[in-house]
Image (cartoon, rainbow, N blue to C red):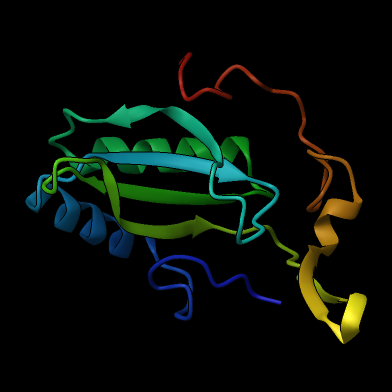
Length: 154
């Protein structure tokens, strides 16, 4: 099952050239960018791990693309996304978010039904990946290289 979160999620995966064009677009609108990753892409899991700090002073799209590549290398079996923030309304809001990496296997979700009092029915989703411990949910376990896990330390 292919996770469909963020802009472009129904399209084929973006190439590095297409990612660079989106970074250019965000910079043209003066939107700061950041990179995040997770092994739990549940729709309600909006807070992913940050790869370094948001790049508020970024002028060169190549710098962010280098960080995307480094994050992919460090976390090849995780979801990685780029987020662009817009502060034009007086608060920091997400203007653009798109995936730039996916695990090789995406097991998906199941719908769970609960029947309650007075025949009320409630539904929730359960990610198959969360049946395994964090760091082992997709493909191989993290190798513990860790020197760049926060986006720093070249």
